[in-house]
Length: 259
Length: 364
Image (cartoon, rainbow over all chains, first blue to last red; front, side, top):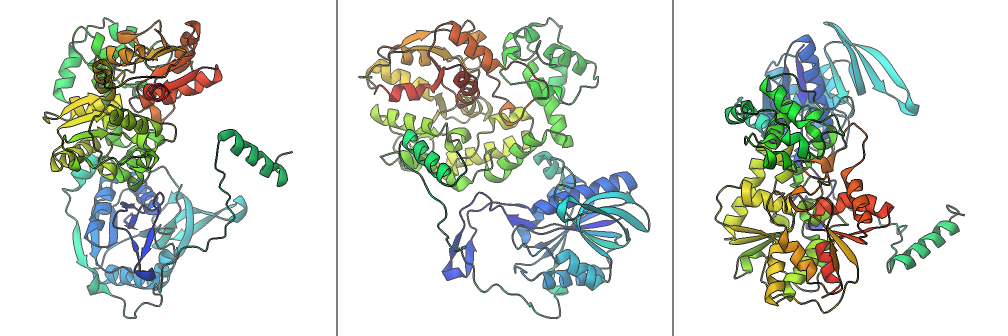
């Protein structure tokens, strides 16, 4: 089974105090480190596990700037055979534009595949719909929130989807198809620096995104970055420990949390 | 496994001195002599076993054939790291270090936050005349319990008239535990980055706050030409020379715990003791296992980042019980790892753990 996995290099923002600059025109990421999108890490691991069992290849594809090569090297170190960079210095916020670019790229370059994996969402844009749109434009069956792949056959797969209320849905999906992989589907292996260095020796093919641009322009554009409105519900207690503890107990009693 | 290590292992005579000094052998499934034997015969080694090692170095110090068992354990871990088969919490610590240059994944931009607690400015090392760097360490830069240590030491150095600077956000993890976890590639990256920074700013001397950092910077970064010392070495000289005086008094019985990387691995036993002895009112006690035979707290070698599978009495608890038997009121240590591991059982048993600088701040 040949699996294409889309992987994105994203800013690691969890621990950062992000600053909006130029009156909302952009976010200052100059001192923020980057990493692989968490969902894509699970997607690559799942794809590699499948080909380790059933044969075939994993191809990692990243749409982004030259630095995105980093996530391709990582994917190869995890077990992907190839890494393709669809290079663009522009950022495609619109998931529709992104999906059509992927469609054009796959079709123009005639890239063979049985299944396409995307992460459920990316940590930066969080639209969570590239997989769905891609399935639609390619005319393929699509499933979101995949939390388990129970069987892989030539013409179909049995997968599990995450539903509300703690339920799971087991479905049969025809191959070829597009799946959006949920984090937690597996435990991704550790990728050592030595492994990444070895992977660097595998040639990564670079394509120009401009050659596969969507016919229509973006339907979604970022107008302004903004901080969430401050609601002032947090109370900061300061002072000596016993005073602060006394204040805290008072508040907890007042709110009925502690009798 | 590198040929040199494999050849060394073949010289093991199974005398058992390693196991005899190991803080894990005998009470956990870990048996360092057995690991050497299995390595000699290339037998299968259960994957969880290498992770019990605390990298205290007792086995390597005691080995009569220079097999360096603790280094062999690193090689065994290396294989697991290369295969990607490591405990999730260790994996997280490594990935965090790759991204944020510290095992907790805290923002690198906040690495110098401890400086805000000072009432004076500490210059960047490049702006100092001495080019003397205070190397802070990840735990002490981020952990709320240990952030007080760099603050204290900075105050003590200033009081004693020692000029020093910092790197702030430019400091990266020293890699001491990363190498011991078996991630040699990541260690090399950290080493390269730190050495590049030291060279860029012409660093001449490093005062390391953590014995773990001191070990890596002094012994594992190669011939850097930079003098690396632990802060207790500097303070001991200041006390001896009269530059640091203690007008207050600390009327307590204090037992000093030798951290493995400071004591048995670096031979720094007397400096912390001479500082404590200079504190008026302080009565210095010794553990039953002190100096070269000091019992490891089990915080090093990556053990800080994960729990081993078996349940057994922790060394930190053994240490606290011994401290209590000796009549100590306070356990003093000069290592953030030791402070963190000793504090929980000590609190349970009504004892206080203080990092050495915390005692000094009460008497200056």
